[in-house]
Image (cartoon, rainbow, N blue to C red; front, side, top):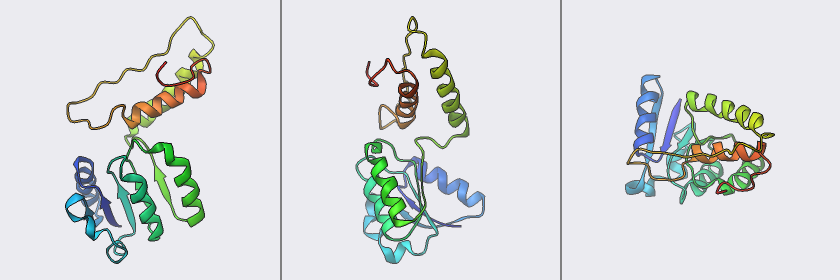
Length: 166
């Protein structure tokens, strides 16, 4: 598969390493120094874009890829207040779009355990559900997309909780 990487930080480099090991080809790496290369002429070389940037650019990057007819896998967090808008845009364009706040298999198993635990805890008002997050020193966004996903899952089940901050 021919891949365009949008965002060539820690995750972009990790994706590149795994993709090359699996026999895929990285045809384009877009990051701050070469944003001018994020063009339809260059993107046509790719079969898919993998987007891992930041909240300030993710929505526009995904939208640009869809406008270029390129399916997108996105792992950028901090912009999901516009996720529903992007899902509708994707459906309108009829182009593939996959989003997750975390692509780790272990974390996705934990997401399922979290939903079940929140469901089981919901009727027990004598117990409080609290989520606390700790990160490595290089973590850029806090709360992380993973923590936001966990909190949203809890809020779906524990109706007495109204916001993430309570």
